[in-house]
Image (cartoon, rainbow, N blue to C red; front, side):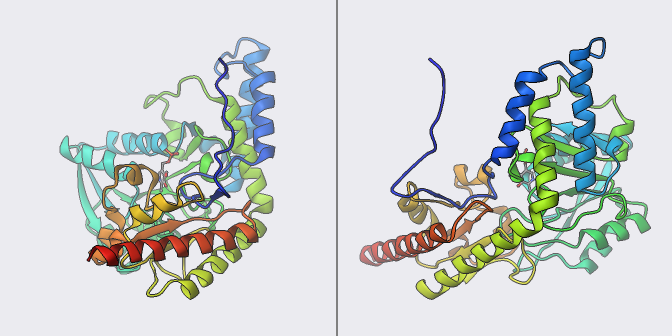
Length: 385
Ligand code: PLP
């Protein structure tokens, strides 16, 4: 039987979980399909025109991804996503030294934290932590003081995938370069939403992922001069050419339409935020409201545990309690813990993330549904007392 799937639907199923993944732009889906059917050659099969044609497409994709991030195309190394790109970057950084001393923020994604903690357990890395404040912000003075502690590598994300706070990457990269420290920037949620200039800002390793940019899952990149010079570490297997071409198309679309699409997303986010503030008593907005991603709204509704709210919304509005990998496990968010939010605010936290294909009607419907789910849970909690 052919495995197929229809779009999940409920009474009105509205997708507001774009931090977890974005829907694929139909224009991207078209080039993925065309590449898959017309250019099926293995890009490493350089002996015939099928392989050469696929390799040619990958080369053009590298130019498009590089243009998007103001980098050199020769430094783009395609991967299966950000997680693999981070692992390759760390492997290259660690291979240069006996023990890598890493400055790392406490709010990095687990895709960065897990391999670093594993390297630390193996005695191949030591970690120096950089704290965040209650809005998830990281002070430049704290970055400077860690950079000056004789570290080899600084790991700082460009923006946070839970609370949306944007970090001062340009300034951090300048501090790192001044001290001869390499910098690894996880730009997964930020690429296309905040300015990034890899070459001009002296970023040593930058990672991103297509599926956060309306591209396909299973494609990402490590952009790094060190990675392009090193083909001994994590030699790439057969390239996923259709996904790579889809990724490049997503970057092309974002480069030309991104600013307008992001300001539309911001308007939708602000409309939702205003509606929820009006409808829900004691609502807290988490993160830095002055400096956050356009697609991020992170709230806490005291008295309404988030799992109960989410389960009431399951078939109506897709939102989450935090990072996609953590939400399934129901473990407390390390980001909210790093921000030292009260247990009450952590347990009632909801991440809502609109995107460019949402409509005003969807936002208004979602606001009503989220507010009534919170009211319902609060009422149920009161009757239990
Ligand atoms: N880094 C951040 C900040 C993320 O949000 C994610 C995914 O949610 C990743 C890394 C992992 O990306 P990928 O799914 O491409 O491996």
